[in-house]
Image (cartoon, rainbow, N blue to C red; front, side, top):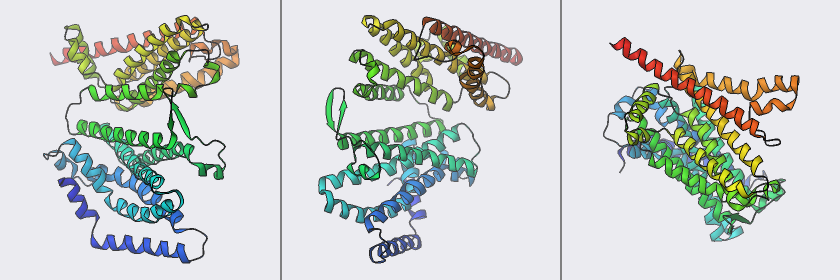
Length: 451
């Protein structure tokens, strides 16, 4: 058995805690069944499941490593022979085993009620959904805490609550998507229930498709936890897992072209799918450039390797945001080529190129801010600059000269023009050159001091 998991079993499932959980849940279900409060035991069990597995479970997962750091026992565990996957499995499912005990008890009345109403097959799908929801909440909370650990953040109570909130937010997002295929949502005020989902031109059963999607995304979250744990354990991560994730996300999101706005119906299927994939890669680039540490030493080393002709070594050290940016650039180029035969080709191409130009500017701002003194605050400086560029300055300029100048600040979907694309790339290249120059100068200064 996983030694870390076994250790947590001994710590979490003490006889007193097990008896307490059984007694409290038994009393709650008894009160719900015979107390006349109007709530059925199955409905009560569902709400308790959310509280124990999703809300409380996300906090337990967030504390699984952070708690060890606060108790000064983490350094000893890092030096053990346990691998990253073993550590993640032991921490994630060991630290939350008490939550899963309560959750499995709640699943009993929920399963009985579902079988009675919808049959065994539907009940099995629903129970798998509830279990997947708990795994997503807990793994997202653990991933958030591991990212913060890698960034050497302080683990205050507010920080722990933030890690927990990431897990809860992931569960809420999965819940809302799942309810799109739930007929009961009509009773809760929703207007649309989807029985069939069109994906890559194929009509699929909505619940089965969403359940498989839930399982796959839960698996990717677990992979993300393992990769982040490898960084904490000072083990190298190769580029292939992230490249696989990019390929999966591009293919997955591109399949929903039938759901796009009717305004784009003039585009062919290939262009629509490239648009969805490119938008996904742009979003992932922003997320990863914010989350990943911007290491000046690494960037200078990559530059030296590239200049020395060792391109493979430089490419192998690419961070996730860099690979996402390259993927966004390649898809943008493919989209521009695909739109050459479209009636609105110029407008679409200009908008796509402007988006890539502003993405270049924004990522370069994050790198540039890391070259300034006070590196620990570099990301906050970059966020403040982007807030000014996208909100404050455009509001002032639009009040003075109208909306025509907005192409200088962000892509304009209503009136795209080659002027906007040109302005975006001028800004992007200027900031990129400035960031590269500062990296090179800081490296030269460091070598002179060493000499």
